Image (cartoon, rainbow, N blue to C red; front, top):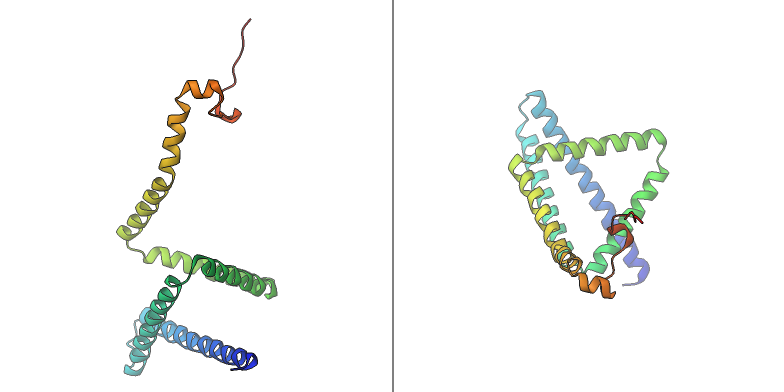
Length: 172
């Protein structure tokens, strides 16, 4: 396949994915609006919502597997491309559209936080705290042991930085 044909195929695939995601969003929005209004959706609308949820779940799983198979360098390169793409998209927006988008993103973030189970959120915070403590514990212990060895400090084998010492007042 020529380079141009490959680019065209990728562009068609990207456009198809974008259309599919938009249809999914619309079906989920409609189902949520009906639920909030207390109305019973038709069988067809229920089927569309189930299909949309199933497709979204499969898409999340596919993305999770794809990211897990990436090397750290490729993952970071993809993140950088995404940051650049989002920045260009925001710059191209009008001020009012940008403010509306930011408001929607803040609302989505609040909804995600609200949807977390209380225990699940506590478990995530505890896991993050444990990981952080585990990461820094060896360095902290090395530093504490080294700081306690006065001979190394006085002999110059252990550096003690100025901001780690209290100012001393000399009385003559």
